[in-house]
Length: 329
Image (cartoon, rainbow, N blue to C red):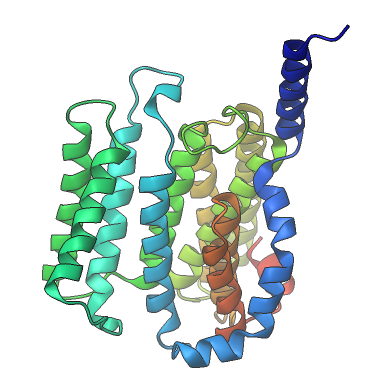
């Protein structure tokens, strides 16, 4: 009476339809809330165990985020055969991410506790990393050369550099690069069912962009209170309209250039607010940094990254986020 093949196909179709409506990363985030609550409650003990204080948590947490992102990009990336277009810049984008993460980690190695490893252990680790890089990009003969070269160049530049890469700037740059790559080719990173992005996916990407722009503005612009009030009001309203318009167009088109343009417009809006203010908002940059790391851990389904964001919230000085953030808008 019933055909087994038809039953299986119907089940698969129902699963795909459910996945299109309900993003998997969102349910992962909901189910991991008890774990994040435990991290929050045990944060003092964790920070004491690993000697995390406000002076070093940015550097040490940034290294862990960069390391996990490196592993995620190399091991979690999908098959290049699933891409919609035969010609893609994705291998070069992945190489840039590999270069940035290796550069960030290598430049901060001197500030981290040394791990005791003999020569054989170091050789084994290097061999495993080399093998993973080679296997991560086999779509063309030059793929392994590109990834190994990017990692080696980043590591060598980080080791010979006199100064370490700025922790906050490095983390934000890596997070934005990965977010743009996921938006470019979501099917490669298994972001969305078969590359289809729901409004939930796009809202989370938007929130990452907005939080990252807030971190950049607060970390690089000083409060001057030098803009005339009339000019400030006009400029603010102009940038508000532009930002909202680009957000709406991005939600409709899922376009990467629109996302980059939206980030630029929001950055100008936040820079105007910070520059016009009489004093720098206390603790807001730290809160926005923590939210950026948490959201990045959610969309990439990396609970360790989300846990680092939770540790940021517990260690770094925090502000009344909504009241302070509303002043930026």
